[in-house]
Image (cartoon, rainbow, N blue to C red; front, top):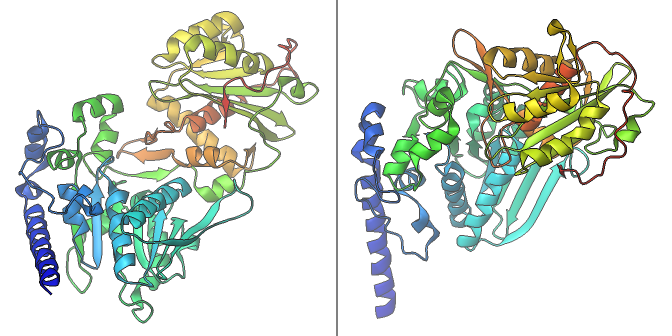
Length: 507
C-alpha cells in the first residue's frame, strides 16, 4: 500500500509539474512580442538553451521529455480546433504525431487521418508517428499501403493498425482521398495542398458527427502559403460563433529562443531567398502561390513507355532528342533530362541525377546526352557559368540571333526567364505533349514547384529538401524549351557510341 501511495504521489507531482510547465510555456512573453522585437533576441543566443529558462518536467524515460518549449505548449493544448503556423525545421510533424500517438494509446479504438501535400510528406509524417508509437509502447499489428497500381504509382493511403484497435491513416491531401472517413484530423503543410479550400470542404462532414468515436479533433499545421488562402482565412478569422481556433505562431526566432539548436544566420545564408525566408521561416503570408503541376495533371502524362535510363544508340532511326540540364549548387544535385520527339509527343528517355559529383565528372557524364541531342538548354547561373563555358567550347553555342548554331543554349535564370519556361512546361502537361516515367521521385519533384505571386508579377520557387530543389522539374522545363525550336534532322550525324548505364545515379 505504501508503495502504491508513493507511486500515486509521484504521479500527482508529475502532473502538477506538467501543468505548471504548460502554463509557463503558454505565457512566455515572447508570444506577445512583435517579430521585430523577437528577431534581435535570437542574435547571439546560446543554441540549445531557452531564453526564459524553461525546463521540460518529464523524466528522460518518457518520450515527451524530448519536446522543446514551443512544442510542449502546442502538444498540451487540448482544444478541439487548433491551427499552428510553424517555421520550417521546427518539428511540426514530430509534435503533432506525438499528440496523435498519445491519443491512440489513451483511447483504444481511436482513429486519426493524416493528410499532407505529397505522398512523401504523408509517409514521412506517418514514420514520425511510428517512432512515437514505439516510445508509448503501442504495438503495430498491421501496416498497409494502397496505390493506384504498382509500387511506383500514386499513393491512395497508408494505414497503421495498432493492437488496441486504434488506427492512423495517411493520405495525400486531395478532396477524393480525404472524403468520407470519420476520424480526428492532422493536416500537415495544409496550405500547400493542391486545393486546400476544396479539400477542407470535402473533409468537414467527417468531423461533424460525434456518434462514431466521439468528438473529433482538428490539427492544422503549416507554413503560410499566400494571402487569401485557406490557412490565411482560418488564421485571420474573427473568433465569433461556436467554432473557436486555438492558434500557435512559431517563427524560427521563437523556436531558437525556446531551445531549437539551429544557427539562424547560417540557415539564412544558405537559403538566399528573402521572400522564401519571410514565408518559410518568419511565417508571413505573402501575396500568394499555387502548385505549378498538381498530381492529377502529372498523372495524365505518366507512362511506362517513358524511361529513366537508356543507351543513346537506341535513338538511332528514331526522332530527334532534346536535353535540359539543371546544374547543382551546394547540396542540390545536377540533373540531365533527355526527351525524344516521336510524332507529336516528347517521350522521356533519361532522367540522370548526379549528386556530389565534381564539375569535370559531370561534364564527362553529360557529353553523350548533348551529342545525341539536337539542342541542350543548360542552367548558366552562378557556379553553372564555368561548366557552361566548357560545354560551349566543346559543343558550340546555340544563339541564332548571333548566327551561332551549336548545340548548347546557355540559360541565365532570371525571374523573366522562369516566366518563359515554367508556363511552357505546364502547357506541355495540359496538352498531353509530354510522357514521363511512372516514378515517385520524378512525381514528387515535379509537384514541389510553386508559382508565386507578389502583387505585381509571377515567379517560380520550390522548397529545398534533402532530395534537392525541384531540380528534375527545372531540367524538364529546360528540355521542353530545347524541344521548342526548329528540328533540323531526325538524328545528329555525330554518334558518340554506346553510353554506359552507370553514368551518374539513375532514379
